[in-house]
Length: 128
Image (tube, rainbow, N blue to C red; front, side, top):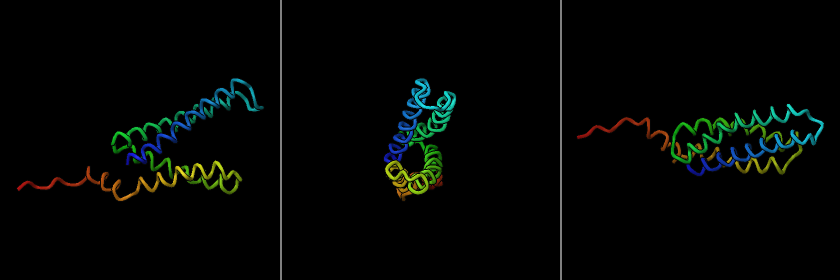
């Protein structure tokens, strides 16, 4: 679970860094995009991936609620991976993202993780 948590933290940190880059790019007026597009993207990334970062930190700390947010984030990133690898013709970013998303999903659904999560809901054994 902690390994999956660190991968989710990595996703959150990378997205936050891209949000900062987006603001810097908008401030510089480097491209023909409007400044509001850069700020809007940065705000969207900070809101969305702020939750992902919080979920990753929760998983690293052993808090169960982080798993549901992490699973949802990975499931939403799978089509992004597919799009990067196929329609967008960007195999390098697609492969890098796949190398994080797929192992994270595997770790989040692995038997030890499932047992760890189920432990909270297991009925207490009667004392004899």
